[in-house]
Image (cartoon, rainbow, N blue to C red; front, top):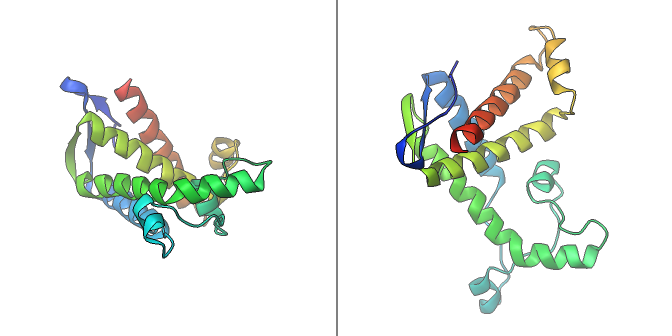
Length: 175
C-alpha cells in the first residue's frame, strides 16, 4: 500500500503508486466522470454562451451530493443558483478528473501544486460518491473495524478508507 503523499520542492507533491492502486484510482475517477456529464444549457445562444443550464436538482443521490442545493430553505433561490452555476461546476469536476486520469500511473507520480489541487478535488468527489453509495456515516471506522473480511461490503469500505488516507496525506503534503 502507498505511503501517501509527500511534499516536493516548488510546492508540488509526490506519491508512489503500485499498479493496483493506480488502476483503482483511474477506475473510480472514470466512474465519477461518467456520472458528471457536461452541463447542459438551453437552446438560447445567450444561455449557451454564458453557460446557463437547468434549474432542476439531480435525482441521483450521488449527483445531489456532488451538486448540493445552495439554499436549503429557498427553492426558488436554489434553482436560480443551480441554473447559473451547475454547468461550470460540472466542467470543473470533469477537468479535475481528467488531470487525475492523465497523471495516475504506476510508480512515482510527481504533481505540481495545481495538479495536486485537482487531485484533491477529484479524490473528494470520488469519496463523496462512494460514501453515498455505501451510506457511510461518521461511524465508518468503527463499522470497518468490526466488519468481517468476507463481508461483501468489506472491499468497498476498505477502498473508502484508503481514499480517505490518500486525501489526508495530500492535504498534509500541501500545507
